[in-house]
Length: 496
Image (tube, one colour):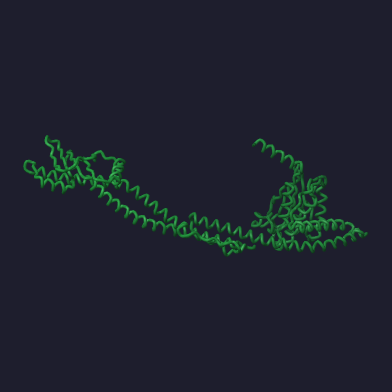
């Protein structure tokens, strides 16, 4: 098989456009997306915990102030207490008549208030992002009930800018941690998938490119690994596909070479047969009874051979023409085939014609003669290869029978040979699958099957074994084919 040397070899994709780069990018994106999903509740929880921390510090400060004599705190001490707690004002309510409050003299009023006792996750996430996105300086009031107050409530007022700065620092830390984590995870995932998936896929790709360059080179077939996953299944299926394709291409190459050789041989053989035809015409003029009996058969055989060779040379291949059907008696045709083939049979092989005298078939006489000749010749060759070790009677028998099944003619060719080997049966009617003898070409059954199918019939092995083989041909007439075509058209019309 010739290869197109001008076909460019496919270049692989770049590192970023290939599966490796795409896998790495997708891994990083998915890890970062996971970190974002984790960051949303994390930043909301950080804001709540930061505010609770300020409330805890304010609680300590206000309880220290409550321990002062008369609950009176000097201005400078009050400022230090509030500064240490990180708040502007703090109010403690224990359910007593008097409420203890520490407040800076210059503290502005709160612009917003939040109750941590009623915090919900979705509003908390929204409030956290609002703090991070909002700039400027403003104060907020936060209310909570610390566990140590036993039901009491504390409210603090503080600058939101301090909370925002802490949240930004936390966000930056989370971002850096996410980048480092995504790089580590992406590297691990990429390494694992590269070893498990990408490397075997690249191996498959390289093998397919190499096999494409020369499909007939069986050394380029992929060697399947022992993996039992989808990659291993793909390797085994690819190996099977390449094996079948390579064998098919090798067979096609042999057929092409054979076709060229047949054309050359047919040209010279036609000339030889033409000369033999002229000589046979002279033989037909002989008065010898034996010559007069066989000369017409010899002339008819030469005419068919010359016509077939001319057709082969004309079309460049042995395409069979459509059957030229006619009605004729099958017994006469079987007698003609037996008279021709009996000359090739040994003296221990007997040929029987048990076709009813009145049975007529509607077929191409020349093509049916080729069918019966091929089947009869195969049977004779199978009997010639039989040895006493095969069992059965030493004398070989080949019998041609026929019967009518409605409008279908059923023809049986039976022998008492050794049978067909089991390894040949699945492809018995394919070309170059010889079952008769090792030196056979293996075209006889393929030609017979093609001719029978051209008549709309079928050929099959009815039985085979140590006791012999029976080939059955079912040959419908044109009337049967017409009725079958009408039924098919009626079914199509009803289906539409």
